[in-house]
Amino acid sequence: MKKAFRIKDNKEFQHVFKKGKSFANRQLVIYYLQKSDQEHFRVGLSVGKKIGNAVTRNRIKRYLRQAFHEIEGKVLSPYDIVIIARQPTKYMDFHEVKKSLVHLLFKERLMKK
Image (cartoon, rainbow, N blue to C red; front, side, top):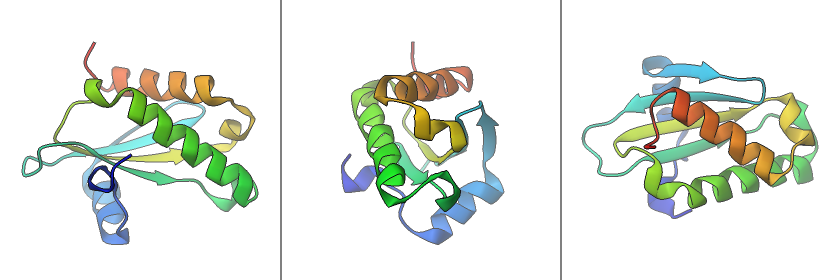
């Protein structure tokens, strides 16, 4: 994923948490906030230490970044999206993570058909 599509700054994460809306399933939590001043979506990933060691957390983040890369054209544009991984994600493979992510984005109308 390109740097322009990432949320890195803690202030930006906190802004999305406070002002945005949230939606969740068993594996992932999504916070999103519409930003009319930007032309593309941005994504922030959060995987807590309770999920596993660094190898496990990095694998989950890699899966989420790759899933966004594959569905990039379908995600609606002017949104900041923060994804928080829950405990069950450490047992999932890439296709399950992508399916869960697509399900959430589709439910919240953040993704085109």
